[in-house]
Image (cartoon, rainbow over all chains, first blue to last red; front, side):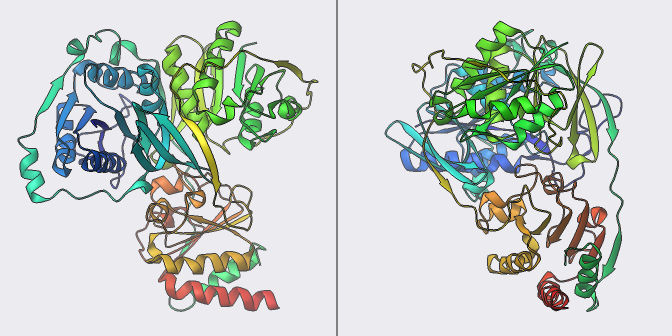
Length: 258
Length: 323
């Protein structure tokens, strides 16, 4: 069974993000870029499927040439090869352009399963997987916290507000995974060495036949303003020297919680 | 007046709270049509009209309940083609997100997710979304053809009945559901929510994070919550680690809550979490790291060891309640 895993390189989520006041785009310069931690779970889920059933995991990402590093990280975890969609015309793409580019890039590939994170940690719109499924005419199994493959079907536990639903779809299908689905493995030194020799194909708008149909040429939306939100003002912060609990209890009394 | 569609999610014949929030916003923007799908949907029509829906489309086929997204996308695409609305609102929920995203790919229109507000601007729509955990507000406009699809975060708007609510004009649809396409089908539903007040409705929430150190320590959180009659919440780190089921998760990928008092125990205050709770009226935080971002939000912060302070606090609460 061949599995495609979509990943995104994002600014380190542990570092505070910045927006360029002029272009209203995410500042990427001088910021550490990492494989989205949410996507590590997607890579892990893909690896577990092929380790059980055989086949290969192909990593797909779209981004600047530097995004190759995120693909290498996934290859170091054990994925087999990569595709990097990169083109100056795709800078600042919106979700639908991203979905179109991925759909075009995987045309001609054989796969039974496409795995994505539920949403990127930086943008968090969570639109690309469903858009990709729609463009490919495939069912989408979203918010999976458990994934099982067998009999030409995928079955997931899909998170809900008060529990989970067991949902089934025939393959090929698109699955989005949550952080709860697995513990992602760390790349071993051997994996990191091997990753350097794994094939990563680079494709641009022209290769994909998407000139004028994706990226800057096909933006559906534009950010026109960015302003700091009214900040909550910080209140009283005290060091606990044995009186902390008492102070909290008094405060709760003032608030009439007790 | 522009035409505004609202994808009104229902459950067992009752509108979900977010559906009424969407209508409250929608009726200030144009002439509102609600679409309610699935068995029992027609029973929700009165409540939808009370919140401003001039017209309600209902379709009661079981497929809308049992098949993810696809049947709703087919029907919405058809009705949108017929009525040509300018704006379609969805709740940023599991189902709302899947349906809106698929529909945007089908129609080639703009999809703006994570919205907390929408207003009219220059003949179009200006949509406000929070970034970086809500520290920055970004305004986005559609540059694509109508309709603009917007996913509004739950609790961004307070649901209120309309003053001039019309009698519901209900149109029952009966278009056959396409069963030729491969789909994702729900086999069964499992509930795993514990007892106590619901997070969404609770006046007081006690929430625990990774700083508790180990799953067994979460008992302190449960115990304090029980003493205060509060609901229990958790950070994503805790849910991902399997200490608590997902239903407890508060934040970007979990629930958005607006209690009167929010007590954060061993929660550092990552943006992923704070976006879901910073609307609380009063925030109390206990954490050992004085640099933790949660202290920038807290009305009262205590820098110290949760394992020592929380048991003391439970005792303090008990003794004060006794008085």
